[in-house]
Length: 310
Image (cartoon, rainbow, N blue to C red):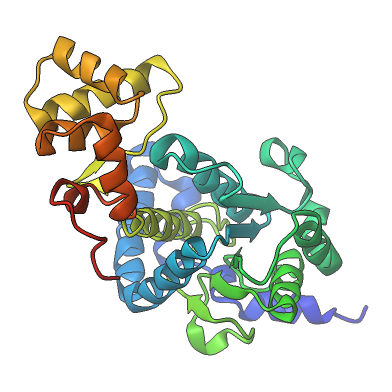
């Protein structure tokens, strides 16, 4: 039987190699299994740190797109797709963004979030189709997620995005010199072979999650969504977030619980407005005016200044 080209391609991938440190894991006691996994996991943040210059470039692309009314689309399959959807889903409650601002697309559609749709990732044309259905425009940024860098669904999406004129980012756990796609920024944390050969939900998945945390969080900070190190654009959509909003106002202003609650009510439930009201000694209307002038940056609004430089 003739061996398909994909066999040799997979054989050469960094994510498909055997890990010499876990060769005996099948006979190891539970404690040792856990220690092997944990030891390998320690390599992940080191690999991500090496990619900070490229992550920085990607953040600038994302911020620029957001300021021009563009959106960020994560596109992936399997674990990578689910991680993109997770990061996108967390942005509205954390940073008060509209749901369409950061979106996640996964091969196989919403069902694939909960149950594996393994064949779906093999159709390159589906990646382009899903971006078309999402209404992607040249103002948007498309970020591909594929540990192996070869996933057809993701490759198809990136190629379509580039044809459209979008800025493109790709997060993969294969070496940069083995990355053949044309993209604006490639982020390549090389974490080494998985503890279980080819199980990229492990170190590769952890690396992708760390990078996504950095991309979305840094971008939102540069949009003024954070004051000091606190979320100040959160949406008070449940009891926990309502209480977190009050606690944030209390910490920043020194007010007690009742006073912070009244201040938030006067601010229309908007944490930023409440903080500026208290620290600048102004009305809600004036606080909102200052925030508008400062592009949402609380420090600048308190000082009645324009936004900080990019």
